[in-house]
Amino acid sequence: MSVDEVNLADIMEGRGATYRLLARLYREEVDQALLDEMCAMRYAVNTGNEDVDAGNRLFHSYLSAVWERTLTELSVDYTRVFLGNGVNAYSAAYPFESVHTSGKRLLMQDARDEILTIYRANNIEKLDSWKAGEDHIALELEFEELLTQRTLVALREGCEEEAASLLMTQYNFLLDHLISWTPMLFTEMEKFARTDFYRALALLTHGFLLTDRGILEELLADELAAGG
Image 1 (tube, one colour):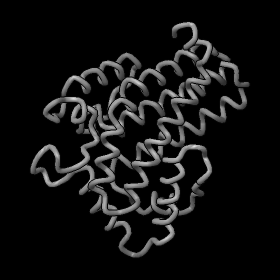
Image 2 (cartoon, helix red, strand yellow; image 1 turned 45 degrees about the horizontal axis):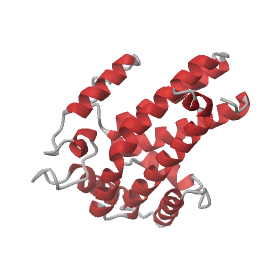
Image 3 (cartoon, one colour; image 1 turned 135 degrees about the vertical axis):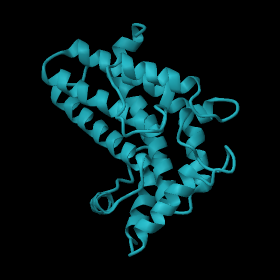
């Protein structure tokens, strides 16, 4: 890792904040506090990634026209996009890796078991309050955010080897899991969404994950060149 410690800490904080926000948006409906927070945010449109820029434009446009029924509108759209009507496996953009990587679009398949093994190897257990599968996109994003925070701690304690190991775990998880299946999810989100909010979320998440891959590849250039 060739970036100086101060810049690297800033990068980790920025990555962590984005993963945290994205995870929250997928985990459950938007509430008033989150809506207020997002309305106050600035949305960059010259990031160098077309999907991030397009997503930010849609977010800005939608949030600039908030009205008294926005929370209801978003709640209905969250249900439509991610929960569907339960008629069949194709009635929503189900946010589980297993659905998109198993032939019959079933929950709790091999992907979930692989994810659970990875979480446990990193001493992570889901809260008892979480009843959905471990391969839900919100938990996968939270996993990346948690490892990013651990990396930040390692850097502040001067443990560069541990930081590099944590970054490699994030990179492998990003490639093997998040990036491997989410493009299918994002396509379905844009299909089912009726608000620009969730279309924006699909675009922004896709662009961010690809951008983060580039960041990690730059930070891990020496390690990757040496074969990991």
